[in-house]
Length: 129
Image (tube, rainbow, N blue to C red; front, top):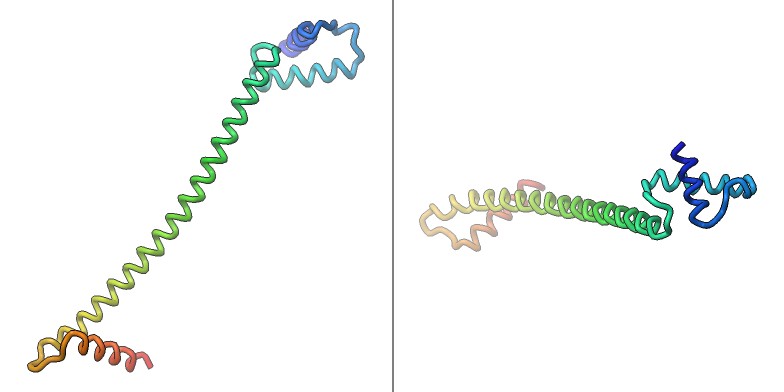
């Protein structure tokens, strides 16, 4: 019943009577009435359709912006995780080097810091080959 009333309203607004129209025109009026019901348009004036279509396009644009922001957020999160993993690795390596240097500094007549780091590095290289 609501669709029939919608069709009558649409046709009356353009100055036509449903009885005087061919069946295909009435069919298109039904499609238009269905769209009006789907979009929940209160009247059949053109400005109502334009306002509704503007609202729909804004929603689509907001969704696209939200999707873009989520994608960028995932990329930044991935970079952050990789940076944290790299930092953890570097801290662990620094700790190992400091442990290797400490015994060298305790010896009487010990080497300087640079020499201790070089000797620790050489020791590690020998151990891995």
